[in-house]
Amino acid sequence: MQATIALLPGDGIGPEVVAEGVEVLKAVGERYGHSFSFSEGLIGGCAIDAHGTALPEATIDVCRAADAVLLGAVGGPKWDDPKAKVRPEQGLLGIRKTLGLYANLRPVTVTPALASRSPLRPDLVEGVDLLVVRELTGGIYFGDKTCVYIRPDEEQAVDTCVYTTSEIERVVRRACELARTRRGKVTSVDKANVLETSRLWRRVASRVVAEEFPEIQLEHILVDACAMHLLRRPADFDVIVTENMFGDILTDEASMLAGSLGLLPSASLGAGKAGLYEPIHGSAPDIAGKGIANPLATILSVALLLRYSLGLKAEAEAVEKAVYATIDAGILTGDLAPAGQGRSTKEVGAAVLERLG
Ligand code: ATP
Ligand code: MG
View 1: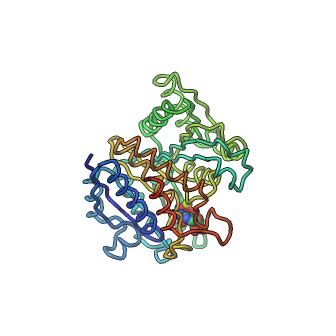
View 2: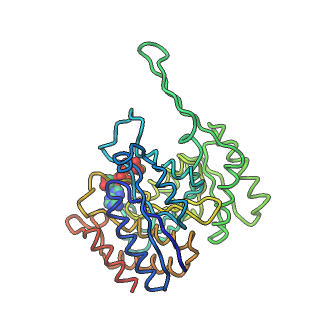
């Protein structure tokens, strides 16, 4: 098949890990006879430096013209001033919103090799295979924000959390469709004892499942309880669906089941086939430029890209197998390897390519 993939390497370790993802795409293209072409755009801090905005029009055009987008990470200390009008993360929020990518899929799979290296009890995390579906274009991230002086010495800040019925319906539907192809269980996470948006969330989720997915087993749990159960019985979860900020927090927590942020991929999907794929980690300024970042989260994001945007199931599975074989062989960057034994980003990328054949 022919496909165009837009590359948005971004800042910090973004370019280092995206480079490895591109190598994998090229290898898949060669091995399976696909013709992938690449286009590139600036996003985040590097775009601010070049154009004064975190999301230039040219970048949006490049993404719209592509079949899928592979993104690295944005941000870093250089652009950290919270008072600045233009900030790197506006690029990320902007591109998700512009492309209408409302469902963010974050799978967490713990293989035996990962379980044995886990900072948690291996028997607890072994067999974990869960998928968090995080709502991505609503909630407190996009509601009105104000910060005003209510007295000369007292400021008041407000973040507004907004959800509509249709925003909840479409993401719950997507979660149920995915659960159908897995173990058929959906856990909807909210804070319905406190938040009005969560009460609506719970009602809508119950209705969508009852009317459209009667075969799905639905459970509701509060986000605080979910945080606890993720550490107590993580293998019980199949698909977790939740609103934007709860999903952000729970997936950082869930990443530790696998052992490192550097391992977790994500797919952001909208109504069509096009999607945006990125590691869940940030730009990791503390290790940027050193060539030691873990490229596996990005390479696993490439597998999701092949599966969800290009419909290349066998290719996606081959990439995932190559990644897990690399982990099994103990070829690991410093975030997973024993102290002092970490391999470089390029060495780990090359090990995956070798196992792809
Ligand atoms: P963001 O706000 O963009 O989510 P963050 O503040 O959560 O960013 P990250 O950039 O994700 O922070 O980094 C958190 C920690 O995890 C850092 O110590 C970083 O070095 C480490 N880390 C993140 N990604 C990787 C990776 N791919 N390989 C190795 N270590 C990583
Ligand atoms: Mg983070």
